[in-house]
Every structure is written in C-alpha cells, then in structure tokens.
Length: 285
Image 1 (spheres, one colour):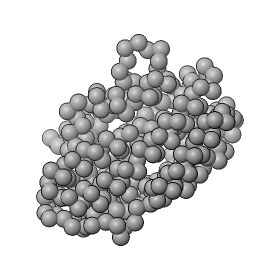
Image 2 (image 1 turned 60 degrees about the vertical axis):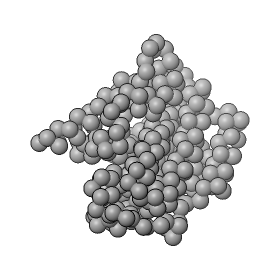
Image 3 (image 1 turned 30 degrees about the horizontal axis):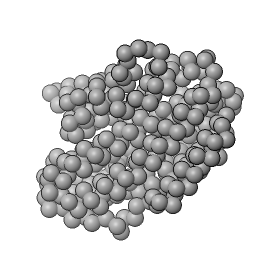
Image 4 (image 1 turned 90 degrees about the horizontal axis):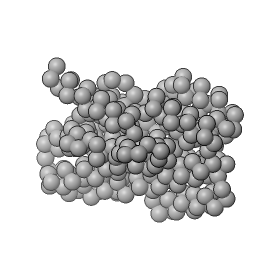
C-alpha cells in the first residue's frame, strides 16, 4: 500500500501529464523528407521497431489487466488516460513515416498475453503477491521508458545529421518530449512501493526480474536480433555497459543496494549483449 503523500504526488503528476502533453496529432507533423531512400536505408528498421513497440501498447494494456487484477486507481488512470493514448499516437506517426519512405507498415502483436502473465494475474488476487507484480511492472516501465528516451535522443541526432530537420523536429522531438513523464511515473511508483515491501517480497522481485528481463519489444530470438540491429545503428553497442547502467540505475539501487560494486544488474547487461550478438550473427549468416 502506498503512503498518502506518494499517492497524491502520483495523482498530481498524472493530471499534469494529461494537461501538458496531449496525444500528438498526425496533422501536426511535417512529412517533408529530402532523401527518402537514404533515410530508409539508415533508419528504416529503427522506425519499424519503434513503431511496432509503440503500437503494441494495446496488447500491453491487456497484459496489465491480466497481471494486475486490482491496480490502484492512479495506475489505471495513468495507463488508460495518459500512457496508452500518447503511445498509440507515437506508433501511428512513426508507422506513417516509414510507409511514406516506401517501407511496409509495422506488424504489431495486439492480442497475445503470455501464460506467465496470466499466472501472475491469478496470484495477484493475493494482495501481498500483487505488490510483487506491481513492482515488476514499475521496473519494466522504468527500463522501457529510459531506453526509449536514450534511443530517441540518438535517433534525433542522426536524423539532424542527415539534414532531415522536419522529421527531427515534428516527429522525433515531440515523441521524445513525452517519454520522460512516463519514466517519472514508474520511478516514483517503484520508489514508493519499494519502501513497503517485506524482505521476502523484495527477494521474489529480484528472482522474477532475473528470470524475466528482456529489452523492450524483444519477445523472441528474431525480435532480440532486431533490437540488436537497432542498437548497432544508433551506436548503443559501442558502450553497452554505460548504456545499461543508465537504464538500470534506479533498479540497482532498489533491488541490489547490498551488492557492493555492482554497476549494472548482470541480467540486464546479459540481455543486451545477447541481442547484440544475435544481430551480429544474423548479419554474417
């Protein structure tokens, strides 16, 4: 159970996000591209990956309903009124851009809810177990949104370098501007909940996180290789340890404070290295 002060801060944050960051309208985008072939060749697969992940929020909501049968009202307001509408528009804009570049549309999975999540949902009817599930949700959200912020920063720089200022300023920049608010919600929620967890709950969160961690949108070997290609194109693989440390810093502090000298939880770094290795292997096959 959250403290009253945490609940109020989260509610105010959700209100502010809804007021200050409405979903981005397609009509606000300047679709001017000076060299569609070059932009597609360099960043087409990045746009496709990002569009698919953003569009899959409809399935993510189904997963949330399955794994969190009785979420706090502020959580429900966040994902139903703020996060889902914003992310859907991100996906639609990115997908429209790649279609205009002559690429096929993204193919998001909007229906599949894994058996593991359904089991967590059944267990989640027990309040103390639902706290564990909620913590996993917040940790996943933090890693996802922090990855998105960093990736959009790198994409923005690359698109500007190509001279495609309309894409940079009316596609990437507005999307990038909305992601930190999502990250802040998950971070505040995780910190607030972590203070309430019993030692056995904290142990279970650590164990389940070790077993389940994956980069955003990478649900099978093909998608992990796709993610590895995105990292290679954006230059993330040049220093994976620094990148993953940035993503997992709060998670390390909340779950692994007792592990002296740990920069990155090993399962986080291993998952990103696996994606990079699968992508490299596919390129040389």
